[in-house]
Length: 130
Image: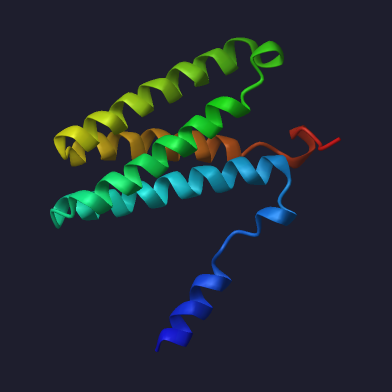
């Protein structure tokens, strides 16, 4: 049984080495959503340590998104996203401190909406790696 679980995990891991910058951001969104889902379940099961670890990972990943923003070329869009990511971090901190599943759900909805928009960018409009 353990071999099949390991095989499943390996098949579902994201191959970051082969990903282009656009795919990397999509992978980050995916991992944020996964950590939020795990944290939400941990709150329901009163698994405080696991909840904290997952929310901490999600916060770090949101930080990666903030760091990836090109504030010079992105203008208002980058500035707005930076502020939205800052709000998301504050929501995650509140969810962690207060075991607030409602805040996690709010973050899930925000990240899902951003990810859907990101994934919908046509390939010809994506920034090509140099």
